[in-house]
Length: 471
Figure 1 (cartoon, rainbow, N blue to C red):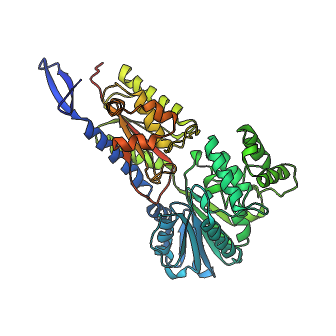
Figure 2 (figure 1 turned 135 degrees about the vertical axis):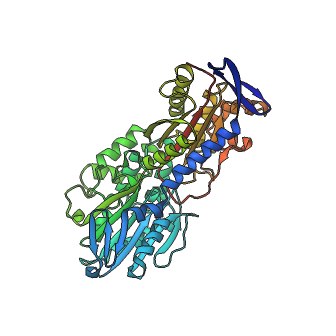
Figure 3 (figure 1 turned 30 degrees about the vertical axis):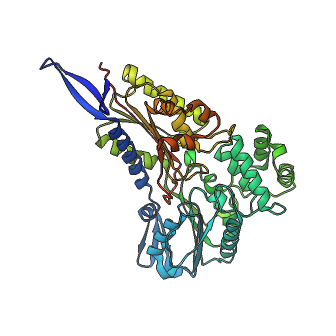
């Protein structure tokens, strides 16, 4: 392979003709392919489409999967929810139920909005909860608490719901929850660990919404943003039996060494709960869940499968690595690059042109003072590892359109990213050490900017590889 006039020339050998043929391939084409593959995955998890795929109206019957609800026997229908995708999910329910909706309210991240006619919409803070989130949660709790035996509560849940559905437990303030959230994010805690604490510091999460709605019928439609699609972790499971305990919360904060960084009121509540002096969240078998149905209507693997279809249509041999990648972001990037290296050296596990797809949600432990998110940091770590390889492109982005506390969904890098940066007198290792991947890719004009996508099924990574190696 050699570079010439912006092309990367790949020499193929025709045994029959005994001659070499030059096939030019633009790196920019590979970048466009990566973007198209990512967008195909994004389109597959459109929240409104997901709702209508799993729900339909048949005259006076609402059909959700294998369950049928006779609307003529239902007095009131309340539609509530929280998450980055809950607005388009609510719009889809309005299309089906129209004026049969008695009342409703969904809470979304600022900017993740859709026009709604029958259901109220509250914009609030994410990932750190704010006053609007508390007001929205209070409205939802009051609404479902008024539901009776002949009523139906439809709960629309998606990623981001934990922060957006914020209603502090007794003696816990919003400031306490904000400080706790920031500490957990900074220490690199997983979403399972963060949400275990959120459930035990809340009056509405961890199954407590279902308890408040009892004896009404509750149906939760859930768009998963959690590795393994654990129902009680997605948005901290407001309608799901909680599998975590106060004891688990205590182990988490002690394990990360953040006891001294959390508010005293939070530590006291966790300690008293672990000692049995505060009631646990409702568990499996609690009567609150007898009339509750929880149904996942979209997940990361669906996005990856759609991305695979598009990659194959573009001529790439494609491998789905996993939809459950988690752990340290930089280590995950190096593991992905190890697979690229194997492809280049041995042609395994798939030959070139190759596309490796993965999903999930990694974590970043903050050690610097920069700006970025796990996807931008993944792309930066990968860029450093693929420096000098043959034609390789890595795109990592969040399906929600927001990577960490930035306006970028992620970033795209290739095997020339590091050399480009050095020509601009940028030191990639310093940016990585300072957790400043946003400004690194901003200078290179390589941020992936989608704006709010109104969906959220974790992250999607696309790695494309082309080579002159023959076997």
